[in-house]
Image (tube, rainbow, N blue to C red; front, side, top):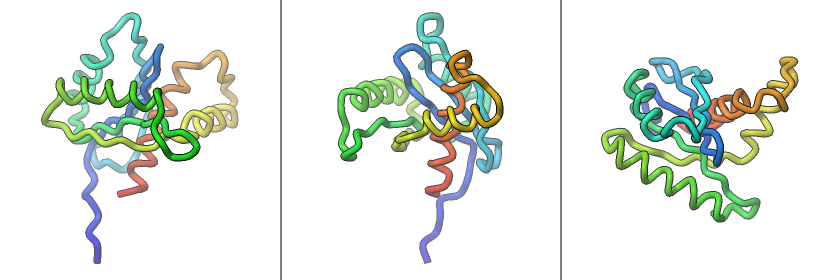
Length: 142
């Protein structure tokens, strides 16, 4: 019988050109919740993620990877991987895993809409909700 990886605190990251959405699990690694959206013009996202990882005791960083419909990586994935290299150089002791982020933003928007939130006015919330979806996808794969 295959043994599943044990659960532990993790950060989910939805990389974007303008904002980086961040979510975290609870200390048991069971439930994901939104943390914040980092506005890249104002804050260094690598340093802020390092602070958040330390604060929540993250033992894994889960970075959403945008794959094309054919499953291949394109220019967007290359930007995410370059960001991942920066994260790993800043946080070398925390493993970084990539998770296909296909449909995470759409799923996040649908959940916010069904909760009565107008997504156009809540872009920062969408980034955080997408990070939650990324983290949930990773946790489901464990």
